[in-house]
Length: 148
Image (cartoon, rainbow, N blue to C red; front, side, top):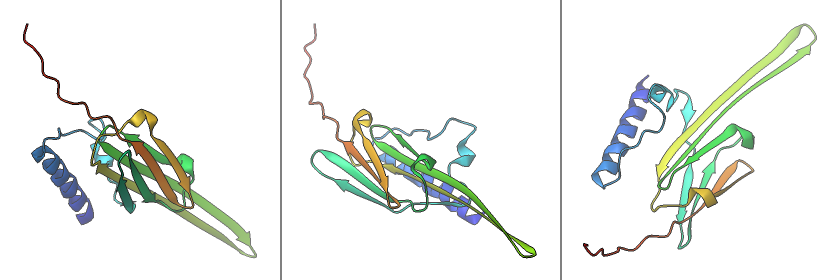
């Protein structure tokens, strides 16, 4: 319960910071689903962001998942990664049944340091590391308009 409050506070502070620096506030999910943004058992994966001349590369540690269990949402300036896994194992041996359930959730949303092209972004997942290569968008130069 206390951790949910901290997560909500962190998300609120992130939105305030973005608003302060001129980025509009965005909803991550449609209204009515906001309670599910950061579930109680959600872990935040460790993420490295590499900013090069032509692209931004994000590397996230998300071990123990299959690639079809990972969801990536990307806009021009925000990356959102979420994943959920549920596994159940059962063994029967002399006189007892061994049953184990495992579930895990990951969630992380990050504002990107510059705008990217979501249409040409590529993602790969190998050995528990998700790598997302996001080419930077061309920054359009100012254009002076003549009044007619």
